[in-house]
Image (cartoon, rainbow, N blue to C red; front, side, top):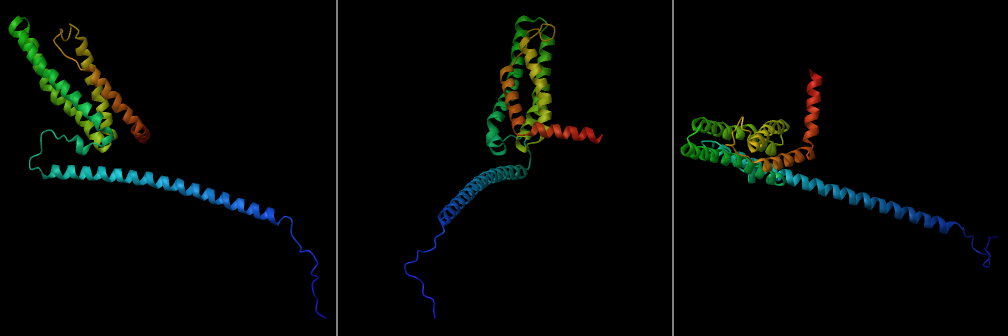
Length: 232
């Protein structure tokens, strides 16, 4: 005889089923939220990398255009200088001020010749010695400052070369000491017939050093120095 269930019997219900279901839903929600956060974080990282790649592509394109422009010249210019094309945008301001610093020393040295020449004509006292000294300053100071510190800085900003940064800091300190000495104008050396552009030089040195440290070049130079010393 077949068994027939009693229609008046209560259905067996698990009292914990609802709690298990809610706990499962909470776990799924937490998992989904975590996955969404990870996805958002990865998306932000990808955006940052994409922006960095675009910046590098633009810099590479700019350098290639500048290089092709240089190769296209039959005669290379005596002074190659194109900040807008060859220097990264975030350091162009510092490079322009460095160029102003170099132009300042050029203008001061040329003006120094004019002043001592006028003084020689009017006063005629110890004029030849001071005039020759002013000419020597101009003939050595103008090309020397370009080759020794401005050009290395230009190349360091363009190629991010640690060696060029070190070269710049070394000789720009000599340039700064010269401008300070010229500003003081001690009678033993300059006899008051000199010049100075100390303020802009200090500003340029500070800005370049801040960029040098902030870009990680200082740490890179330190590592190279340690590796070089350990290999000896």
